[in-house]
Length: 78
Image 1 (cartoon, rainbow, N blue to C red):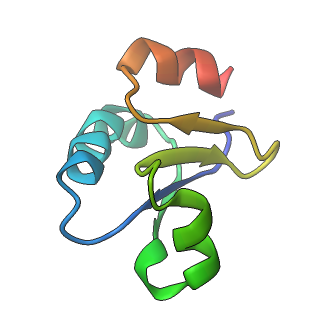
Image 2: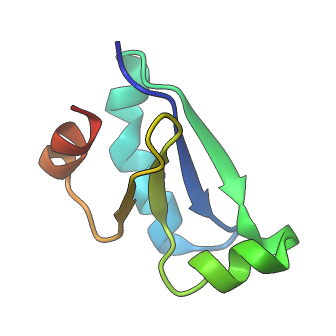
Image 3: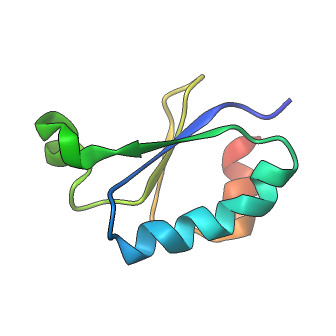
């Protein structure tokens, strides 16, 4: 069973779009990813603004900072 995740980013972020595309094969195999736009939350901008996109596991709170590749996502989800 794959963990639920959040992808922190914002509209107009090219790297966020690249990360979304990289995650699509995982989503097609059952990974649930909530896209979180940090632009509406000052606290999230403070935390994630310089690191987006960031993939976060909902179960453990572990975070995978950009840049990441598919093999790193596989290891992160284990």
